[in-house]
Length: 397
Image (cartoon, rainbow, N blue to C red):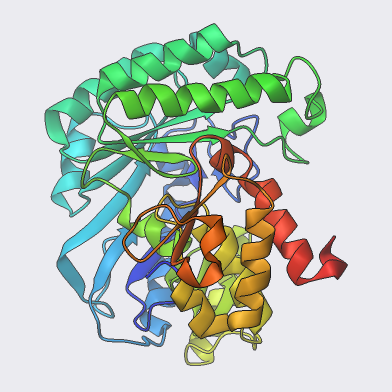
């Protein structure tokens, strides 16, 4: 359920760090290969894959339950993979041709996440993307021809982006008819090119009000086109939600492998080294230790609660109040409900056991599920969650 960690770890994330170039907004741990031919980097890629495989083989498996999602990886003899598992791979336009896509799908990948980001050539260039609109169109044609489960990514609130330009990208995405759409509001991160060029809230970045209009527009256009707004940043056709990301948002446990990959196993969150050299050295130590990670303390109950709230309130299904009471106690839940009620009905909704809207006059005992409204509650989710955190721990404010 949305409020309880899974007893079996059945999801895997594998980090593949090689990118053609670093986009201007990207602060991920990657290796930018430039325009060199594959053979220039082949030895490094082969060495990295070998290190990841060694990490996988050395990992102590906590459960023999088959994996239900992989993002991205094809598994290893250490893991059994369910025949119905979702196996996703992120791909960018211009980085694959028809034969490469067919080979990828033949190997077992059954869901592609396509990093389009914009249907505006000027926006793509401003972002430092390695592809243009011609490559976007070619990639979309291949998706329609070969994939029956694919997602499309867009970014809003980009420098110089206008409401008209954003609407064009949204309607182009609807016309492309993917099974799933992810919309990410630009975060200007320190250390990136955008971080050096722009300050959040200042032109040429859109104002907060314009960014809010972009978010509302995305929700309106995509839901009208038949997409379920099932998470703050994600929309899906019926039956096409991303199973792997639901593991994260439901605060369940998952394995992770590769440089900078962050796992969540046995209530311990662990992030691997963020450079190729340090990761390779870490793998050597990990294998030599018999698959024992550097000692990390398990999550405290308070951390579990904050993670559960922060992640679960991002989902349209929200959180089960009875399970929150069972895990964290009545007193804590009463404080959470009091904080959420102060937000008002335009931001937070409360439901009874029949799935009907609960009246505030009925008291907290009748409330069985809580969720944020779409779009206002979703749009202000960070502020709402911060308010709850401050109520639970005044020192956080």
